Image 1 (cartoon, rainbow, N blue to C red):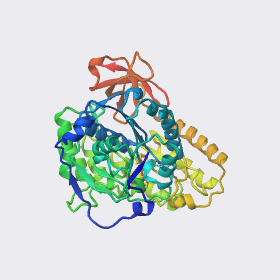
Image 2: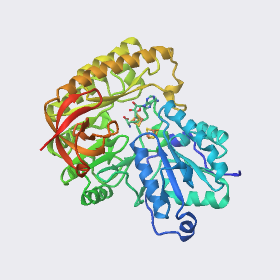
Image 3: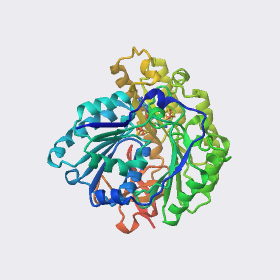
Image 4: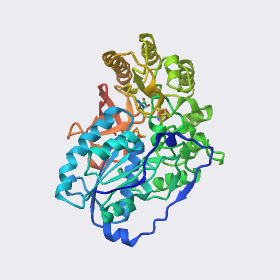
Length: 478
Ligand code: SAH
Ligand code: SF4
Ligand code: F3S
């Protein structure tokens, strides 16, 4: 198969952050009949890895494909287009993709005009892209996070040319508005408020794969929120790698606090947001969260490490003390606040003492949930070049110690909920027990309870009867 390279990624270019203002681009959704004639009634399948940014991208891709008449399927065997939407944040996220794509090889032999596409953060890395291209001859389309808006014509080109197409431009990125989207959930929605990241934490690949930090216009965000409100959505989650930096790159004079206030004035019962970087969190944001009952008193505030020395090497821009002061300010001002976090264990050269600082911080904060990761070197990031004498065995040992530490403190907090009544948004039949339904409390605890189909998508009162580390049992209260 001939390969047509429209653009290939370049980490140096991807890291460039000009002071140039963001370009806003409105797509014209008027249909191209040639593309529709070629693609309509073909079936597509999408498998997504990674964070909510990727989940939301999948919804956009679905919207684009449906707008040219393609039909969703859960069965790869009957698909005409298979898209693997990848994540590059850690090595194990990438390993899964190699396995997955390997399993698809045989399908191409059966269906000659099958399009197998790989997109997402993995292909934004030059060496990984080359390895994929060399390993998987069957994959005939690669596109990057900046090319999603162009998906329909890329699929059309791949089909009509018979070539393998690579379209991955490393650039700061723009904001594309008015793209169609097909939401996965009828009562919970993600709303992008910004894209990209400028923080350049030394371990992290995201600023290279997603471009510069760029906000959507206030008006565009709120228009989407108002539409969701009119459609009866019960929960809206504002998405960004660093939502607290919202608006800083625009000249509109709005920041994240303004967005929270505007969302607080809607009738959407649950407003959430993720992810918060401690650096950009200010007092007005804390005030807004405290003031509006529909803004959930639940903040995901990644700390990464409890050691100021490690935080410095990570380029996190705050010390242990800064973080703890912020947490204190939040707790003092937001009654009923619960916190969750992300922690990396085994950052290059992390000493026993530095690791111990993480354990003591965890105890001091008292998290309600935490995601813990063993450090994974990402090629092209500064941390990947740091010397690291710490053995993998030590890292695994520390990881286990941290997890059991966290489980203790999380269980304690969960046990305090027993006997009390909480509002729960009913998601549907429980994934672990077909006789039960499940949903989330305002502080994001998963609860299983007896209910019926008519309550799905509604907020009901549930009394907690039993607590396990990662979920709870409860009963409906009238
Ligand atoms: N923008 C968010 C989340 C980004 S990725 C934030 O700043 O918090 C989600 C989490 O993955 C990070 O919080 C971090 O804990 C983890 N992570 C990122 N890069 C990693 C790496 N190279 N190795 C291990 N964990 C990593
Ligand atoms: Fe990665 Fe840091 Fe940006 Fe989060 S803030 S996406 S961890 S660089
Ligand atoms: Fe993964 Fe990209 Fe999200 S690297 S965590 S899918 S931004």
